[in-house]
Amino acid sequence: MQAYDVELGAAVARAQDGDEAAFAVAYRIVQPGLLGYLRGIVGDDAEDVASDAWLEIARDLGRFKGDGPGFRGWSATIARHRALDHLRRQKVRPRSATLEQDVLELPGPHSTHDQALESLSTEYALELVRGLPRDQAEAVLLRVVVGLDGPAAARVLGKRPGAVRTAAYRGLKRLAQQLGVDSVTDDGPHTLGESK
Figure 1 (cartoon, rainbow, N blue to C red):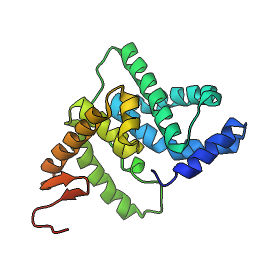
Figure 2: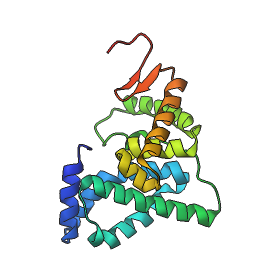
Figure 3: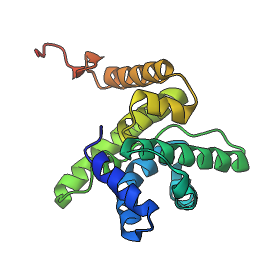
Figure 4: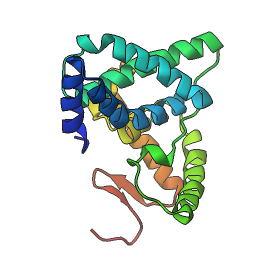
């Protein structure tokens, strides 16, 4: 469960009762991951697609039933549908996934020096993720960037949870190999000679 999922669930419940400030809280919690996921699918058009998705989310909020993690998955499903519609209109295939550092963590105080270093490492990560097959890139984006668990990511993609877990594992393993990391396990990556 994501750190903010309890707060998200409470905000969504209040927003369903008409609390606009609560909807803004839900947006603030979900938007960074959603935008990162959309950048992985539609690239530079992600903000436009996210706007369309949020209009639909706001319109259909009264129909949503669930908690914070459920809202995160429901929002990702809507965003994915809007992204696929966008791609059909453009008649192009989805682009390789892109990651942005700002979607991996909630905003915090950073010095310009730290931001410059993060930007350099983000550019390198972007280059690596662009090389992943689309199914692996989407699985990694949903699991790591949006923060969905396996079953929720599977519902978004319309696949079995095992297929999504496998795609995410293969994508992370491929990235680890490219980074010179020895292995990826459920406990995270391990480098050669590293002891647990």
